[in-house]
Amino acid sequence: MVDLITESNTLIPLALFASLSLYWMWRRRQTRLSIQRARRIDPIGEAEVFLAYGRSKDALRVLQTALNREPGNVKIKVVMLRALAEQQDAHGFVRLAGEVRGALHGQPVWRQICKTGQQLQPGHPLFQLA
Image (tube, rainbow, N blue to C red; front, side, top):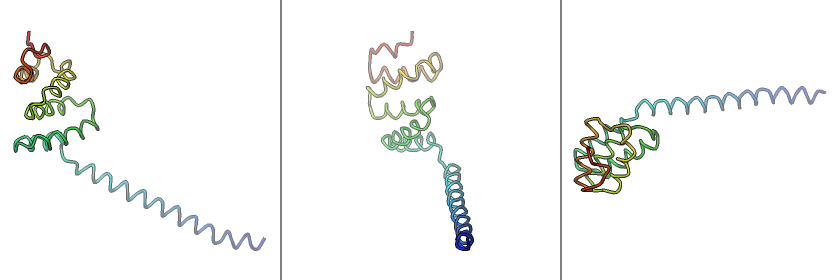
C-alpha cells in the first residue's frame, strides 16, 4: 500500500508535466501555422510580377501550387491561361480554357481568352465567338 502511494506521488506530477509539455508544443505549432497563414503572399499578385518580368515558368509554378489549394478558383486559372499563352503551350491553354468556359462565357475576359486561343490554335472550335 505504501509503495502505491509513493508511486502515485511521482506518477501524477510526471503525467501532469507530460500533458503540459504536449499542450505547449501543440500551442506553439498552432501559433507558428497561423503566423505563416497571415504572411501568405497573394499567389495571383506574385504570378503577375513574374509575368511582368517574363518569368512565366515561375508564375506557373506559383499558380499551380495555389490551384492545388483552391481547385475551383477561376481567377487563378485566368492568370494561368496568360502564363500558358506566354509559353506558347497551346495544349495546356486549350485544356484550361475548356475548364473555365462555363464560368466565363459571355464575359469580356472570355473574349480575350478566345483571341489568344485563336492565335495559339487557329480554327479551334472552343475559341469561336459566335
